[in-house]
Image (cartoon, rainbow over all chains, first blue to last red; front, side):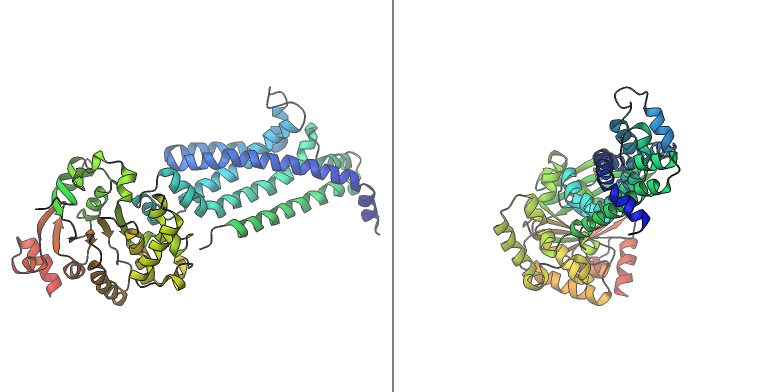
Length: 212
Length: 246
């Protein structure tokens, strides 16, 4: 066994526990971002006038350097402070844009003739959304969630800076002690987690996506 | 005279202050008859069709459907009572042929057994045996087959009025001719009134009991094909009709 493998193997309990924390940070924030982003994205297609300012605002928020955003959130009451909750708030902010943008684009990508047919045969707006628009937009919405999750896994390593735990803990410790094996002990599982989640969501897309 | 299934009474529609699309449209569609609405593009024929099921609202005049002003009828319920066919059928690409045909019965809450019985019968009528076609998706069908599914979907809930907007417009001339022949065969079995919008005068003359020639938002003449040929009401109709006869 090489030096690095043994190093990782000896710390497997800690790595596993931190991977679990990391996964929770990403999963919870992606779930919240989806719960906000999908309805908001749909709403923006119904109010075209709002689409540009809202998407523009989300773009701008996305441009805030992530470490700075984590820092800004610390003094904010309720949402902020030290720990996982603040990290999740920041991760939701970053995950929101791809989900929001893709939901908006996905609904708008449904062919006008299909939308006209849905109206013309007598679907209510809710039926049209549930039976036609969301199923047809699903691959694009899910692609947005995939981007949000993969980016979220990387960003969540920074959450360790505000005491939220996760694999960033190992990376920060490695940076502080100039021990690249420790950096890798955090970075390798994070990369593996990102790839694994991307793969899983790809399976979801294939299994539950609309067939044409 | 029986009550018209669909009636346009001095209907006006304006898309912008300077764009009057319908300027006092008068037209009646009687039970069981096929009326073709023809005219150059932009003459307002599709607009008229969409007023019938309240996809659009008039700015003046009254649209009556089933003897009552459309404006007094709840749009969703009204649309479920009116068959609707558009170019290429406007099929739902993520649904099977059967699911498409059963769309309106499903919205109306029919039981699965009744829906299935009905979709089997409709598919057989339009020449697509359910065994071979029911599980397929629109992308795997030819243009003519998609159009047939569109017709089956429009008629699945047995409406007494069907709106068809360029229903065979996306087909090549041979498939188009074939669909027109079949349409005439279907008409002997279905007693629904049909408002057919087409830019193809030949199609109108072949399929309709009465043809309404439209220009700039008004009906210039309406009557059986023969009358339009023999006694065109004005120079516009004469020229429009002669182009087809030439």
